[in-house]
Image: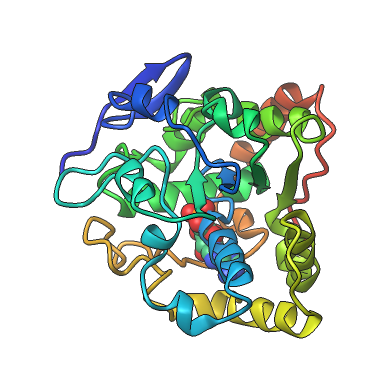
Length: 288
Ligand code: A3P
């Protein structure tokens, strides 16, 4: 594997070959029953995918253990080299309801999702923890761009130069549209605080009839500790992820950023954050 270059697609940096194949993703026609899970990378995508799949299977963990999360919930824009199928290849072989993952910012999500009133779940995570998690992910994933030094990585994050673009634009884009487009806007921090409560919210949003006992069971089976040991969700099946550098299920905490930022880095980051988010009222939490 060679670390890919980034290419500008309608103002958003996307890595190759996703950028090259973007037009076919843009033409994707979803089914009205499709469920879209959208996030900026590292916000708890896999966690939410597993929860939704368990909800659709009424908490049957055995059913969900039959195949990896990438097959049960394809990644819309991912374009893999053969023989690994792309997200679009996987989707066309699936029957509804399909759980689709995307990291695309809202303006790049294919129009059909809105036209067909598909159920959408957005998960947001505070900027500092997202940045830390993304940095470690880019170190261990050779299909991502070279992360460079931590110092440099902070700069790239602030400038929106990482793949899938600006975190600030991403979280605000979905936030502004959440009511118009019936988007359930979740926070990683809320999930850490009370997972059962958030699973219940997802159930309501998806109009499912699942009992409280099953909700409690799902919350238990999607804890960090359980998912870390589950080979179907911990990404140990992906050879291009070097988990000896940093495990995919790394720490799963709120507030790990305190172990990464120096005092001066924090000052610069916080000042820039204030500027970028001054028009925004998203209630992010950086600690619990
Ligand atoms: P860390 O790197 O901070 O540990 P994504 O799936 O969007 O790539 O997000 C990955 C991040 O979510 C990682 O964060 C990972 O550990 C965390 N995560 C995955 N499953 C989790 C769970 N069940 N509980 C808490 N955090 C989880």
